[in-house]
Every structure is written in C-alpha cells, then in structure tokens.
Image (cartoon, rainbow, N blue to C red; front, side, top):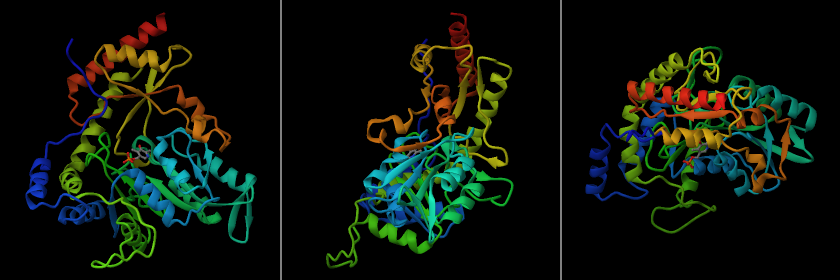
Length: 392
Ligand SMILES: *Cc1c(COP(=O)(O)O)cnc(C)c1O
C-alpha cells in the first residue's frame, strides 16, 4: 500500500509560480514591493474592511494587536486553553498575565463562563475590570478549526467591561455569520483586532505569513509602522517608537495574491469534502463528526472526529499510529496550554469542556486536493481501526 493521505497540505494550482517569478524578476524580494500592497488590498476587499497590514506570521499579528490594544506588563489577558499555543505566547511577550477561560462545544471561548468570570471573579472599578487587582486589558478569542465563536455574546461582555477583543482568525479566513446581528460579517472583522495566518497548513499559505486588521483603520496603519521597525522618515533613520521586524516580504505576498484568487474555491472544496465525510460517518457509533456552529458559514478548515470514549480507551497516540500505518495522517487536538510548563502557574477558570475534548478530538485529512476516493479510503480506515480498538 503506497497511498499516503496527508492531513493538510498546500495547494498551488493557480498563479503562484507566475507571481513569484514576477517578484523575483523585478528583484523585489524583501519587505517592500507591489505585491505586499496588492495582497493587503485583496484581503481588505474580501473581508470588507478598510485597512489590512500584511506581516510575517499570525503570531506577529497577534503580538502587534496586543501592543496596539495597550497591553503592558502586569495586565491580565483572557485566553483559551484548548488551541495552538501561538494564540497565547504573545501575551507573555508583553509580560502580561494570561487567564484561561473554558471553551464551549464549538471549541471556542465559552461566552457564559467569560461573563461569569468577569462578574464573579473580578471587580469593576471606575471603568476598569480588575482581576486580583490587575487590569483585564484584553481577551484573545480563537475561531478554532474555522468554527466561529459566539462573538455577539463575547462582544457584549467585552464592551460592558471595557476589554479589547483580539480575534485569532488564523484558522478561520473566510468563515462568516449567516444569521443574527452579525450576518455577513467575517471572522476577524468583529472584534477590535483580527489576526490571520498563512502558514503552510492554513486554508491559504504564503509559506509563512500573517495579516492584521482592526476596527480603527489608523490602528492598522500604526501596526504596519511598528512592523517595519517604526521608521518615521524615508531618508533619515528616525525612530520614535520601538519597532519590530514583522513585515511580510514581497515573495510571500506574491504567493498570497495567487492564493487569495483561489480562496473561494478552496472553501467550496472544504465544505463539499466535509459533507462527504458526514455521510460516511453517519450512524457510526465509535466516533462522530463534529458539526460547525449553526447560523454560520464556516471555511471548514479542519474536520474533527470525537472519539467515543465509552467504547475506545486507546490513547490518541495509538490511534494516530495505527492510522499512520494505513497511510492516513491524522492529529490530536492540542494539549491544554495551561498545563504546559510556562503556563502552569497561570489562573484557569472552571475548565471542563477543554479537558473533556483534549482527549477526544482527532483531525482527519482535509487538504483541498483530496479526492472522493481518498475520502472514502480515510473513512474506511478510521472505521476499521476504531472497530479493532473497540473489540480489543
Ligand atoms: C497557526 C496559528 C497561529 C499562528 O500563526 P503563525 O502564522 O504560525 O504564527 C495562531 N493561533 C492559532 C490558533 C493558529 O492555528
């Protein structure tokens, strides 16, 4: 059996080579060049926002957002425990304190627990929410696997308590609300800031790269300025703030422009492939395919199976290795961030769902190039592996 079906690989079926060649021929390979501006424009048009700054990674986009939100040493930032650690590390870059809030069944932040945390664990003093005497300056909400968080409810709480909201939309480019007060709005365009990533396994990729947007267009300008070493003058080396080397390069942006042309097609394929899996896992009692939030149109970046733990006690490692042997690449959801060494002393508020899902979720192949036959093969292998583990 030589077949190997990867979890999530890049797709360069469009103008990628053409635009990258063009950038190389022009000699614009670094942090200046027309593709960067073009990429920012394309992102802005797609998301219906006025201003987008392209940067070097999703992590950089989150870091710039925290800086722009005014997060300084000693502040508190509310974060999720069940996600990729890059959503939380930038809080430490600012020497601020993360507090972990549980997720709901979408894997995104639980708006009810967020509310309860603010009401019951904090003090609201002259316009500032304080947790153990420290200002709760911001919260980072992640739209996990392309699923949208309940932003309407999260924004209510954040606005009530003066907390700046950073949407980590690194996995959710193209996910939008279909119903309710947020109908038509895209992930990353609802909070005060929105961060995107174009790492290799994201829905579009620039090799490595990111972008940041904000409700206030001037805030985006300022983050762009910070990303280019805070250079204040085109001729003299004048810097009035501490800047960063966080700008996207023109080569990355050339890739990005081509990928943006394909984004609607990538989303369409992700959705169609999810529906194929759905049929194949229907009525299979050893695992279930997790749905995306009602009232939304998700980019369906990653598909999640919930392992039925009353029937299957094998570890995630055993499951993943068995599937790997059959040529199917899968992965477990992340380990809880609050259990990682740098975060063990941070506060965690009523974690239940995050702990529940940490040991149950398996992501299955979701590349845009996957064929119908490969999807059937994956489903068949998953079923066989689970049946043998349940029987053992
Ligand atoms: C990918 C990812 C990031 C970081 O993006 P990079 O471009 O890799 O820095 C942050 N948060 C989440 C949830 C991610 O999945």
